[in-house]
Length: 396
Image 1 (tube, rainbow, N blue to C red):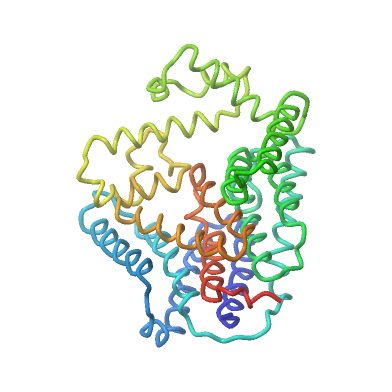
Image 2: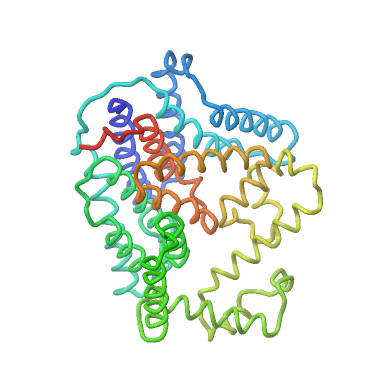
């Protein structure tokens, strides 16, 4: 395993977390801008450190196609897209850079220094978890930011990535499935729960009587939870379900563009939880814009177009739709193939790692994870290292 590079990324992420916490405390815009530039410096440092190894890269067919699509897509996007934001464009390209650097960088085997991992992979996620529990259960503010994470959705995504990394590096975490389930349930994030259950059955489900009995038992348990449980995440399911039923009794999908959230909240018995309708409304606007000009399917509308061109003035809570809309079909194919290659390799060697990775990929359908350096760096760097060491001898 390329321990040298892994340790550098872990140390950098620890420093980056501390700096982000300081920025969060000081609320200084200048310092925040400077700290936001640090990931670019890390990429530059890793490229320089591995320059000779990069020049000797031997790509397989899948990797070659990914890089060709990326180069074509990025070229089209820079030249032809009507909108362009360099910072967010770099964040997207960083996904590929960090993966290929991990997979093809200088190989230096050695023992893993787990002491370096304690703060970024264990202590900080636990602190975030209890901060959210305190805010939601004691203060009754479940929609607050969790430290520098804008909301619990990014906090839980980071926690899942940390579980992924720890599981990949050691076989000491025996109850990974249970830990993941508890984290998702207590964070109360519906998108993460759906993504995890879907991914688990895609990877684990087998067409035999035992698997069918397990599936039926789970469905029965979900019905009982839906009927009798008072868990926050179950309450959210009930709220969303009733809101959708009430909405489509009166309106159609196209009406989402013109209806404000106040009207939607009334249909959900006054609940302010309109996250599903918020997403549907935003996605509907983006799809309508995409259908206006088919040429931009090739180049994309450019990073930042979702903010500029929609009434929401926000990036869509859907990384897959965002890549297709803002970066074009070639970059979308490159991103899709990269994730498929990683998932396929992980599935061959460790089923639960493939479940976690697929969970995060599915979660991208309802969240913005590409913008988050901590999530992307750990997820794709670790994935690259694992594929580099396909027999998983890196485990200790």
